[in-house]
Image (cartoon, rainbow, N blue to C red; front, side, top):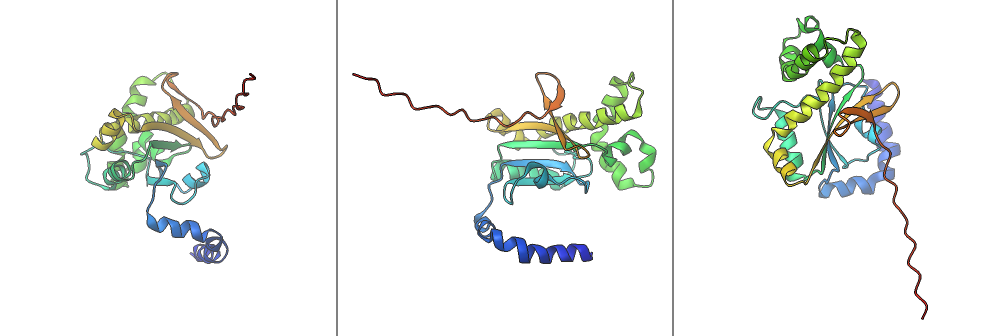
Length: 221
């Protein structure tokens, strides 16, 4: 706890003052670039990963970066998604899984959550992930390979669950928003992005460089 308190004092003394105008401007409201859905895992820092500033990411976190289908539960996830899409008008939603995810390990080994009834109930929202891996990847015997596949498949399942939320479905129908599936390997810093055309996760492409056009020469008379 002392480390956290020291961190607060350092923030107030050395950081806040250098960005005070930015924080004061946020009083007028927020206009985040995206809704970032990821795991509660303490090893994941969305703002550090994306190099974004306060006000640029609307973040939703829970065990396993899970999005319950609309109406399955009346909890914070549905409210967060609805607010981000209908009020904040985010243009993109990212579901970001990660390597070494404890929730996905628990999904693969139900006995690990035998004494964790709340966790076991929560992971029911990822049962489609469990079944996809069990029935479609029987030929994959290596535990680590199955683990990696589970993490990726879960991201895709949660993207489909997102589509069941009315606010998301409506925004997608208007072509006003994009959905993105990422997997972050925190031990290497690599981010994989799902490419629908290739049907697989590939390294996140680099930023699109702006092409500089020279002004056209004035024609001589």
